[in-house]
Length: 307
Image (cartoon, rainbow, N blue to C red; front, top):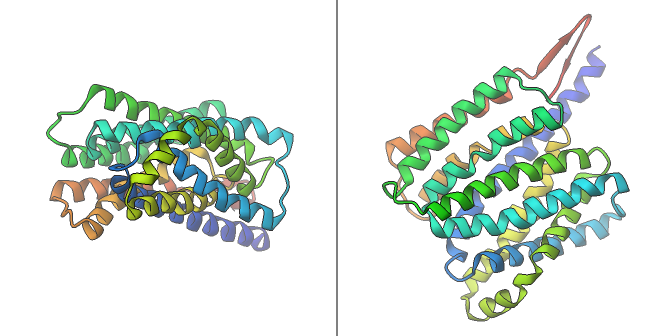
């Protein structure tokens, strides 16, 4: 019995590490986007990020010689590529130009709730009470962070709707991606999802060329950073972890992002958070701890761990 349990524990720890890398890099993306968005339009920023990510992922994919994904994986790859890599990035960039960062974070954090609901319904993952309770706590924390960082409620209705659309496309992309990972590796799913998203954003090639010519070097480097780390690396570690746990639990893990953004903005941009922001961040972390707990399932005569 011990020989069966030990490997599963090891895999769980690696998946948890991969998820940790993902949320840290996704949190760092907010700082980079804030700087680059001054010089790049939403579509051009998305295309530049995806192009950089595609180059890195393509080189790694060729070096590893993993080949093309199986036919059964392509519906999920196309769905996640169009919804998450393509539409989500454009809409989120656009939404954050219309509303303050706090409101955007609050609205986009509807996404993990939608992932849990869609995963329970479409992927038959069920609705574990502990997961739902943890997500409710984290969502409350995200709301507190959003309110504390908002500009007093003067948010654009268009911007709020765009951020809500971003949350929906994010959730839809994750739910599409999960079945694809049953048939293809994390690298294959991420690489070809990024290729699909890049192709979908090619209509923004003209503005990207024009804006690169006028943007300062640090802004262009931020776009490259977004493509290499929060996209190529973080989406691959995300897919690796998602293949080893449920979509609902992975969605709940991303509630750590708002708390990390607050800390990074404090350290990098000198934006000192207020006590209400810190309290909201702690709620986000507490909710993730609740949702990720209870990972053991008892069966007659045996005990195994699941994620």
